[in-house]
Image 1: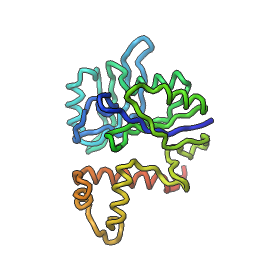
Image 2 (image 1 turned 30 degrees about the vertical axis):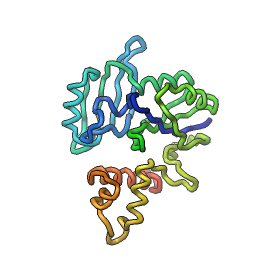
Image 3 (image 1 turned 180 degrees about the vertical axis):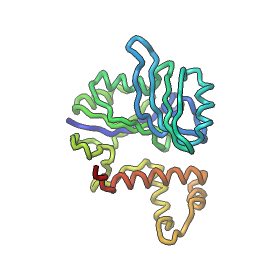
Image 4 (image 1 turned 180 degrees about the horizontal axis):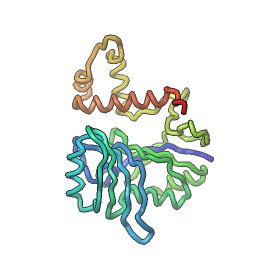
Length: 234
């Protein structure tokens, strides 16, 4: 039994999962798709759980204005929440899951929405045979590019997370933008005590908003903690 963690990129002119319904606004973003399921086999509608970050009130406004969202509810406060959404059509994620189902692959939820050079991309882990993984990769529709991040034998240990496997030695895998920011922060002394630079300085170096740098650093540190912290004993 094998697993593959891949990043999918939607080319220009093809809708990315993170574009529905928020578009390219920085006020609110989809961080992960926790689950997606059709309402029934005879209906194009489906329901999904989305992990959101940003202005939750703005998210409510965008869902209300979206003709694709038939019903929704958002739980959470501050800048982090989870949305239950019933949609009218399956969309790009549903099309992807249909391909995986056809080739009898199991999805390891959630699907993570990550930053890439070409914009927002989708990272997911699937489990199955080598043959099934290769066939599914070959069956991707036009406009979707694939980057294999990790591939190996599946470990059934429940305390082991295949998505935390990184480069040799067990290092966590960061997106290209996250790695660029982390290396700059390290070289500029952001992690020294006392700090030798600030998030605002890093943002100026990369021509990004300070808030965007802060969010990236939170995600980087979260990945580092998840990769190296020992699991809590029950």
